[in-house]
Amino acid sequence: MKENSKRTVLITGGSSGIGLASAKKYIEQNYQVIIVGKTEDKLITAVNEIGGDISSYVVDVTQIDNLKDLYEQLWMQQIEIDILVTSAGLGKFGSVLDVSEKDYDLVMNTNTKGTFFTVSILKPLIKRGGHVVLISSFLASKHIPLTSVLSSSKIAVETFTKIFAREFLDDKIKVNAISPGSIKSNFMSFANPTEEQQKILTANMPKILLEKRGEAIQVADAICFLTSEKADYINGAILSVDGGISVS
Ligand SMILES: NC(=O)c1ccc[n+]([C@@H]2O[C@H](COP(=O)([O-])OP(=O)(O)OC[C@H]3O[C@@H](n4cnc5c(N)ncnc54)[C@H](OP(=O)(O)O)[C@@H]3O)[C@@H](O)[C@H]2O)c1
Picture 1 (cartoon, rainbow, N blue to C red):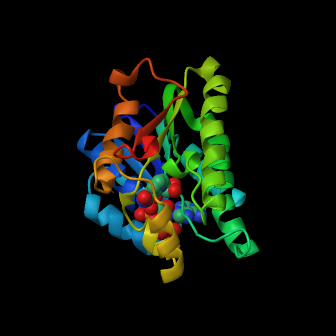
Picture 2: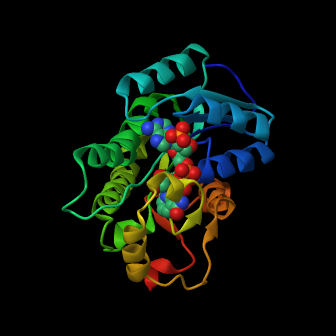
Picture 3: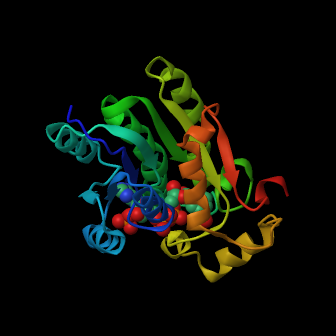
């Protein structure tokens, strides 16, 4: 593999929200940053906005062939990964009676299958002593009407975190997750709840102890912490970055 004095971080969902904020943070820390997303225009905008040692790949994480192509392209360039962050994710709301098969598949394929195969396919490129950070959600431990599919998709991510941490032990790769609370990003505009759904969500939403929504940069700070030497003794953990919503 190519000798590179810089450490390399690959971030799925790096064109927006938490992934984008993380890409900015790692650039500030002099990393080589690779961002992955589904929409080319958004990736180009992100690369131009961030600047520095950053490149992007159009990859739909629900498509195994896309992930294998990404692996091939990185392998051909002899790129090894120090840190893999899987921030690609989305949500749709609906009760058990009205979630369509299309929305069910979209959420599960993106959040659960996409996360699983991103790690599985890119694993051979992750350096010994490297890090994987998966992105869960506070919804994994809450039971809020209309979120059954989204919540379940993230429970799986938390289980992946713990089992991957054990499976990657021999390679000294640490696997942790962040569980964000309600964070300002494009997440809700994509989920696009109807007025009626929004009322139900608001009525059932637990209190945020700190009484405000979070910023993507606050989640990015926690991701950077988990992949720093300061988190040397943390493995298989789910770190809540949620203003205390998980305890209310
Ligand atoms: N914001 C919150 O309140 C919140 C709370 C808890 C957990 N989370 C989790 O945090 C993660 C990041 O979300 P965010 O808040 O930053 O939302 P966001 O601003 O909507 O960003 C989502 C990112 O994921 C990418 N993405 C979606 N589907 C993809 C696919 N099939 N293949 C590749 N990339 C894909 C998007 O790219 P395209 O636009 O090109 O599709 C975008 O870059 C998600 O896993 C989400 O579940 C967010």
